[in-house]
Length: 207
Image (tube, rainbow, N blue to C red):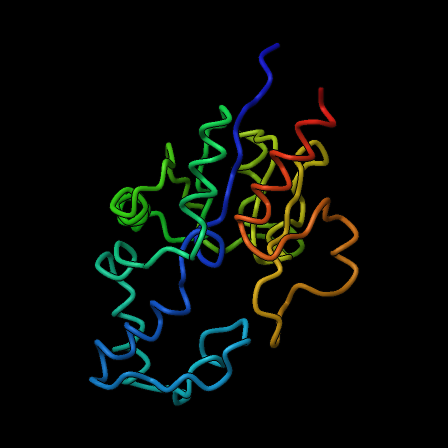
């Protein structure tokens, strides 16, 4: 039986800086760059000093999250180099993202333009049954060696054979707390931290 050499990774918060792109989207719609309010906030709305939108303004802003938006998100510092290191070690990298399927091509374009050696993007949408990650089914089919994400609920229902690596980025209002952490196999500050740990420690343990 052939052993999987796949490592699956989330995009936003792991490969790409969604929070920075959020500010750009706000500026594109409303013509004003939002002020950084809470640099350590997990959620974009709390990080930036933006209004709580309603009605037509909310609809306009939501409409800006189009193919143009999803194809132009900047990379997180060190993420590209981490992916290159994993690929050089013989791993295939697959992006598993809770994005609407119609934007999967835009996400792939975004990653390709930035130089990420990601073989493919699997879009799972964000809706699923309670207590089950929207990514669980895709991961069950993919059967990667490891899955890296920055959102604890997205590990719910992921198989035990898959190494679960949680990126504990900005901690202000983070959802990455509670009993669900007991199911996590390793935690890291960034994808670069995961890559170093995986290549320096995990592989040694398997040999």
